[in-house]
Image 1 (cartoon, helix red, strand yellow):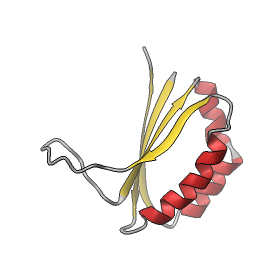
Image 2 (tube, one colour):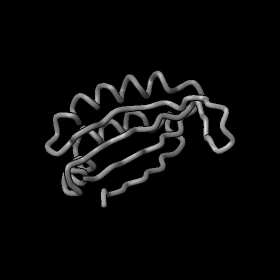
Image 3 (cartoon, one colour):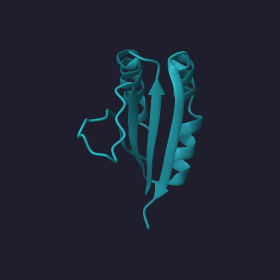
Image 4 (cartoon, helix red, strand yellow):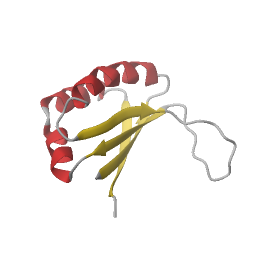
Length: 101
């Protein structure tokens, strides 16, 4: 099983627009073969020294049945369309892709 976390840094105040677009995308992604989970999350302030808190970021949490399922997802037309629609409000994306051992 493949787990993905994608942290998306957004221009200030743009998370509502991003989340609206993402929720439309997620409906399609959850129907893809091999998609086990796909949802957005936001930082929760816990006042811990080691915590990163950014109200202008969204972290996408994903679970895929296999690497090939994730690769198909990344090449899908709806992903490319989504990336184009939000490109003006996204500052940076960092990803972690891990496999259960």
